[in-house]
Length: 241
Image 1 (tube, rainbow, N blue to C red):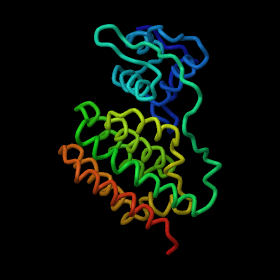
Image 2 (image 1 turned 45 degrees about the vertical axis):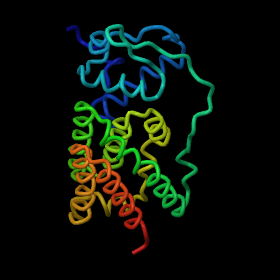
Image 3 (image 1 turned 180 degrees about the horizontal axis):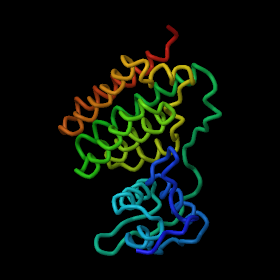
Image 4 (image 1 turned 90 degrees about the vertical axis):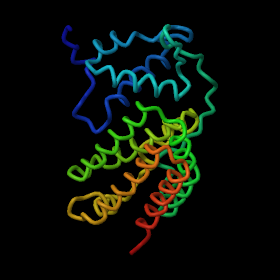
């Protein structure tokens, strides 16, 4: 395989996942009209060579594009770009979450959405999607050593669950919110996610593990309960001491 040009290679040194970055590159091409509606996406092998990533990363990126309603995949034929819908997407800019009350209200909103998404993921997830949730959980556990990566790792875990619900509107919604939905004031971020506060970090990690186990066990009721408990606890942790 020939070397990947530096301007095409995905940056492994950023806090963003490779699949996320590949999605952004492909989405930019679609939105710019470089790949027209009805045209086929580049093949897996060509994307692997162009961007220097693994087949797993490419498949994850295509799965996210499907979830966003940008492409449709046909068995044996490949993935084709869909016509872009009118711009009516739900969106909340990070600048709109300004106060402590806004942060708490965001968690209330997430409880309503993500509790059901977790239940659907337990019912509908594939083995590959479960592996993706597991990888995100491992990355979240490692973020205790690098608190600056904790928000991104936390978001990726929740996004993988939304994707595993296999209802594109859940993934669309979480993608539109982005990592800002995990937003924590810097002091609370350090308080919850640092090794120096091992009790809090262990508790947060265990809550995520409980959600994962319920989804792995295909137990929708337990998955909903575990997600609701995790987000309710997250809200409690943001309350003044």
